[in-house]
Image (tube, rainbow, N blue to C red):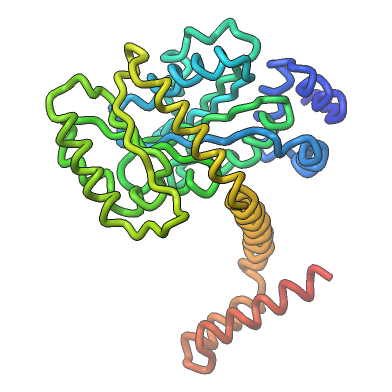
Length: 321
């Protein structure tokens, strides 16, 4: 394997080289041994991009909407990055990675970087490497980064922890639109988009969402998610979505909520890295006599699992010193 010059790679990515950006994201996805070095070089350069999450059930038009939003932000002269997460096959481990096929209009634009990522079984609608990939695009000078989730049902709430603004898309004729408000989806939405609004049932979907938003506990200074009808395939209503995104970002910045969200994002990332490292160290203990002894103690009733876990953590911590 060719030796990686991280400093040179980061420098070329900052200068706008798509190949360098792609290489850095590949290093992240593959958990390269140089990952720590890459992250250390990128972190001081990141933090300026606006991160916008898009989620919703399959077939609502997430990729079409993302493509239309990319066009709108490019018209403003913004550099745009897109991370589109596709589901991995539980059988082959592969993924179609088809979002780039749907976004061919931007294929020759050097100021648009589109990367499809396989979820690799990671829950929550995202790939495990998504936070690091966002950092790569941020450091590479993207003004706006779209993160499009897998779209497998009602559980893609992880995107809200990564995004400054989260857009939840629904479409008429795809079952009861109140389904969109279940399992935390209502709570994570900063903006609702009713796509394919030229279809029968669009107004009913909008009414259902308005009723659900009205039931939520919005304080006097809280953000109330707007509901924007669109027909993304014809670019109808996309300007209204951009306006809603801009208003939400202004609200985030004015009230200090943006900083609080980003602090929470950093805490989550640090915790995830620490837990992963701890899990790897505990994995090294499989077959270790100390772990076997603790397991035997739990089976015999000499220890309870929590006490055994405390002892295991103490042993791992001591070994790490």
